[in-house]
Length: 505
Image 1 (cartoon, rainbow, N blue to C red):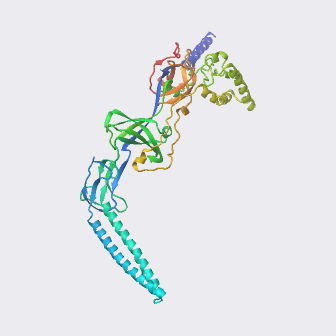
Image 2: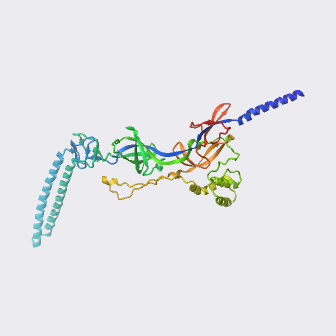
Image 3: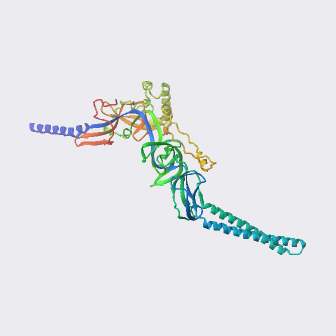
């Protein structure tokens, strides 16, 4: 009997030990947390792109007649004025064409004079009744035909003289020759397209960066925004410009839709040259002295076993200043003490809030769950929250109307189309970060987000202040070693175990 009792007691001890190792130790799993502090400072958002520097106006000078280049009066980098002689095409055949046209004109004049005399003679004889109407009509037709031939011969002579004048090439604008495409003795043929002899840039003190912005960023680019860029020729220098035009014609580059954006640049120092590659940063928005958190904190989602579900915290529901929902609809709105300490509503507002809450519940037949009711209330009070927490106002630049095109012979009688200006406040949204409580569990804090520069996001909340710690990630320690739980990305911040007062500081 005693042996049976001993065996039964031993079995119970074994079961307890196994249960301890299987359950107790699993539930005592420890975590390492990565933290970062809520900071306060400036946020600047840029759109980056790559472009090419060009002159604002450049002209390809060609020829309308074929021939051999006889003389060149301009070379690379020549500074020319409008109307100056820059090239001469051999005009031997063109001169002969003029002489041939002059001979044809003389012949047409002689025929016209002879037909005119015959017509006047026939007309006189017809008036006296000495000739027939048939002969008169024939002489009139010959006279009119020779008159038309005379006009045609005159036009041919004028055309030959014009072609001869085209053999002399003049500079169409003031500027600098940046390219010479022909040499003396080279034959140019003006058939379907005019061959290019020179390329002249109008004013190298005013340049333009022609860059392409893909479709994911073009909505944030507006005319008048400031842009900075650098070139490999001067890696230590930063150049500034202004967005002057966003062209509507799409360009597909490697299956990505892009749009051409022009940036005007002042080049008084003549450092920038046509063709340089520019690495452009367009300033989209900038805010000063705002609270911000790392983007990793917004992406972090902890495992369920380290989330505080007791409802004792007051961090939840920052959008409307209410406490964490405990199942009672009356708790959807925080108490008067919470309101006095920075809540969103006054005493009268809370009464209206409850009345509105009851109306929504009644409209849905009283079947809304607490989560659905909270969602409806957030939508209803979204407008009020935008007034109580207004986003930082930005000075949206006004689009300027380009008038300098008139200086280059372009006359436009139409207004210029401008896309809608980008408003940074339209980027506001909602998010959630996690803080460590004194009991070693995590609690969420709902926040309103603003600008995002790729590393940090602007936040608006009354539940956090600069210096408070938020969780970036967590790793678990067990018998098999250290394994990542969530968000194992490396980032700034310190590591700390739960317990021992690791909450926000």
